Length: 461
Image 1 (cartoon, rainbow, N blue to C red):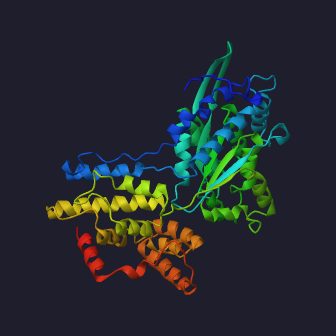
Image 2: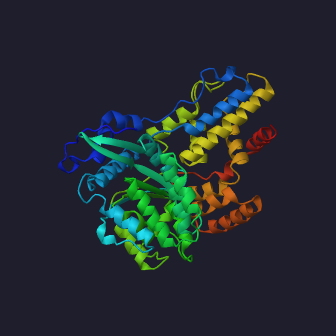
């Protein structure tokens, strides 16, 4: 978008085109729009559509978003990080290009950058169990904010500059700083609509790690990057024995010392990175991690069964247009739906989608008017048929074993059934130590003969 300047009532924000171009972030109507959520996915004439169209409509469930209570806090943190980041830069000052020139010179001469030229920035953390919607919440906010703002003239003076407001990248699963760099260059290219940075640096694999770091700094500085979101921070736990792997030291060098704030997101497993007991690459990592995390920590949790967000989610996932032979879901259905999904949004959406899909197929096969959406037995059967790979992880979560949940979940999403079985047996061994989660009652013993009959019925579709 082209820059539209509007002054803000803080002295440190005055006469700064980068800040004034983001004045819309402070308007209540913009914030309300970002935090509105999305519940519309089901066509009004759902049951009059053909089977294939009905099944295709179910893909819209993936777009359902109910704002969690912490979404407003995340929005406010993203906004204040951006404004404070740009407030420290004055592109119209005489020495505005000094840092950029220093970085370009260091890259050309193949030497490290002198960090004394730079300033530090804040880092915030968003954490929570896998599936609670950390990444979705952050990216919903970021994607509502224009990623690139084009400046041509400011107060009657020519000012040619592309302002790259934010980027979002994943920490690479492989322990490689060069892989992190390529993720970064690809994200920048995607934002700018170019291919040059990723193409250039993918051909420079023989260049040193330090050169890749300096290259990232030069690109960030050239485009006045305002904020970087780094997801999957828990991957860093797997880098312990790898040389030239991304670390807290590296992230601080690339972004913090350039004055660019970071928003980190991780599963609960990744919180070890900030623990005094953790030292994958020496205690320097822990010291820097604790120094970097100098701003707010925002924790996301599964939805409470009695919370407005959970009730809104159920209504969104089971709207009146999709209900068949019932006007609403029974308390028993809703109770079971919560227990099976653990109140984790990702699994709520997946369970609802699988239920609707199989129910559509069942109605089409039976060709009668007896089948009802409010079918508790079928809901349990869908879970036992379609959640086999992740059921042990969810069972661990219900027992209050958060660490075991994180360990089982990604493994079962990737490993074949044989490995899943072996890991599940290992998990059962740990059940000898009674650990329970008061939020959930035991589920495994509730599979009655009637349930198994219903499961066979669903499985034969």
